Every structure is written in C-alpha cells, then in structure tokens.
Image (tube, rainbow, N blue to C red):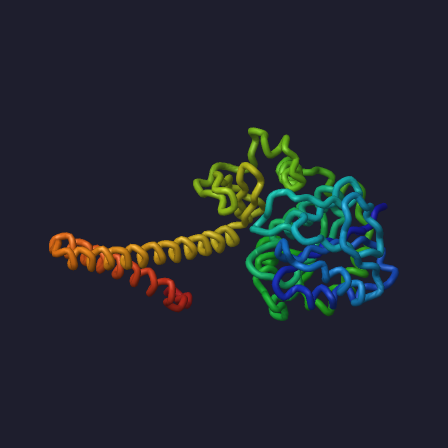
Length: 335
C-alpha cells in the first residue's frame, strides 16, 4: 500500500522565514519529496535553495527539468518557470502565468494532484491575496491532505485565510508544528484506488501550464464565457466554478482567481488614471501656450477658446489627482 510521499509547499510574501522553519524541522530520513514554489519576480535571485539547504538536514536544490522525484530531497522552482510533477518526474515550463505569477503555487499543486493523487500533501504558507487556494482544492479533490499555516501568525495572512475558507483543509496550525505533522502524515498508508479519477478540467489546465499547444489552440475551454478580459493578454476570460471557488482562464491559458483578477484590474485602472492625468496636464499646458500666442497676435476669440480649454483640462486633471491621492476608504459594517 502506498504512502503520502509528495509534499508540495506554496508561499509568497512573508514566506521565506516560514519555509526555513518548516524545512529546518524535517528529519534527515524524511520519506517524501518536498517541492517548493515561492512567488518571486522573473529577475529574482536563486537564493532560496541554498537558504533551505542550510536550514535543515535535507538536500535542497533548484529543480531541474526531467529529474526524478526523490524522497528526502527539497526542490525549489527557479525564477520565471513553473514547476510541475509529470509522470514521476519534475518538469519546468514557461507556460502562461497564473494570478500574474510564474512560478505559480496553483500550477505545482494541480499537477502534483493530477500525478500522484492521494499521495500528495499540500501546504499553504504566508502570502498575499488567494494564491494556492485553487491548488489546495485540487489536492483535496484527489484525496490528498491539506495543511495550512495559522493565519494569526503568518506575516501575510491572506493566502492561508483564503485556503482555509475555500478548501477546508484537514490541518491548520503554526508553522513550528507543521514539520512534525508532516513527519506523521508521510507514514500514513493510502488505500488503493483513492482519488483514482482525474477530472478532465485538471487534465486540461495542467496541459496548458506545460504550454501544450494542442490544448491552447483547441476549441474546448474550461468553464463559461465571463464577459471580462484577461489583464495579461486582453483576451476573453472563461468563468470556472471549482469546488466553490470562482476562477477565470483565457484562451492562451492565463489564469486568475477572482481576488487576484480584481487586484490586477485595480492596478490597471490606476495606471490608466495616471496616463489620463498626464495627458490632461499636457493638454492644459499646450492650450495655455496657444492662448498666449493668440493674445500676442491679437486673436481674441482664439485666445479665449484656448484659455477655456486649458481651464477645463486643469479641472479634469485636478479631479483625477484628488482621486489618486485620496486615502483608501475603510470598509464599514452595514447594519
């Protein structure tokens, strides 16, 4: 009978210290492969693997494409590459971003759930927004076990809080206790046949993360048209209902949780407003210059028109400036 021998760990903001503590607490004879995704920018450093290697007795290295899953090792996703589990081996991919990230926690969790089913343990640590929630839903849907850091102690509680709300994990506890829990869980036997069925949607989304063009170019898309556009490519988004979690994915594979999509839309809106502010201020400045030239040339009607246009542009620019610089409004309880 098989045991739980694959542990996937996801973290984002505030996650390095949590990862160090978790890995540092694992025993030297830990009988499972540990795979780690930390959300980092494409130009980020590769320092995490050496940090984790020094943190505890397990061999921690940057993951390489095609290497086998080896128990008692820690493998870390490199910058700008998704880390997946495919046919008992690690795979690195330049596939479409999820929630604006590559590597993405959800990609690793989903692929591991697809590949090893109930043998998988998913761990969500500190981070912003709701990355990892969809991945933990996938792990649990295949019979795997969900473990989440207690949000009360996380430096960034949003990721753990969302994972708890959406995936209903079996274990929520401080990071100081997760290593000992994992040491117990990896010794549990998994009944034969647990989580044997792989949902079609999981197959399709894992293939998209691997940049499988047969899926990206295909006519079948998971979910229903959402009426929104993808912030990454401006393509149409499809709405996916996934175990009570609302997600979105575009034709070429970019994926968004509802919360991450909303945050990206807000960022895009702010950028558009700053561009509008710049354009209005330039329009006001040019109108004033043309107004002065018209006055010098004794063209009174033109001078008045340009002055009026400059004042109108300045007023519009001031409205946008006041909005951009106003402090955020605190949420108010209703009722």
